[in-house]
Length: 281
Image (cartoon, rainbow, N blue to C red; front, side, top):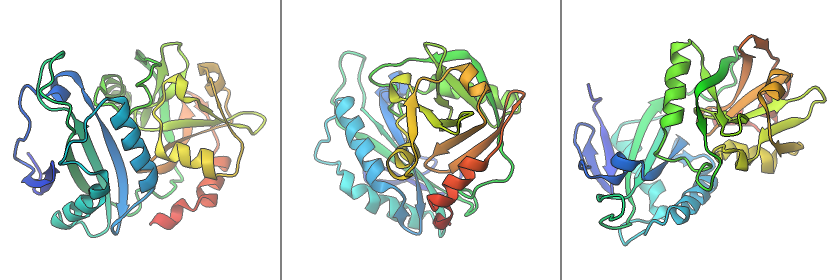
């Protein structure tokens, strides 16, 4: 059953039960597009400049034509209009799906950007550091390619979707996605960081296939801590003292176990407090 409410398609409001794309849509057919998820609290989109940079970069890399109907600077206005229309008074999760229109693989009708904006109310405690950590493990059935598009939040999301399906079946909170070299890329919804026996903080470099995450960038640029972007193996992760995950909606979440390997949370909690993530609530 479709929930009541509205979404925006190319600048116009539609009810949630309305359809706006056709069977020939290239995003539906080929995953030809990308998406962005954001946290908005009382009209303020957190890390908007980072999101804006990532959207602009992806538009160029995927050869989109902005056309006359699309303005990235108008997105914040539309997002807040939609939040108001959907009667969300507190914290909202925002998703924007960007995609090409109709056409076959070699003959798109045009390269203009189409977009759908959706909003959902979430609890104000969603971003708070939790005392109970996440239980995760390695997804066994798929690998993510390391290529020019692997850092994009692509609409071609099959590996992550299957990893999330597997995690739910295994009663886990998330799944670790490996790259083509059997090294760590990221998880289904987050970037991954580890703390080794020397106290060094490590995270997969972008060439390892991980998404170019917003909080990942924020920590690399502003934490004041030495964070090394490296290649990380399964063995490295299973010998870590600590592991934590980051994404734009949840902020920082610590991992209590990878399989049977138990972990602590001292560094991730310190970073959470240092970076003032708790002020967002």
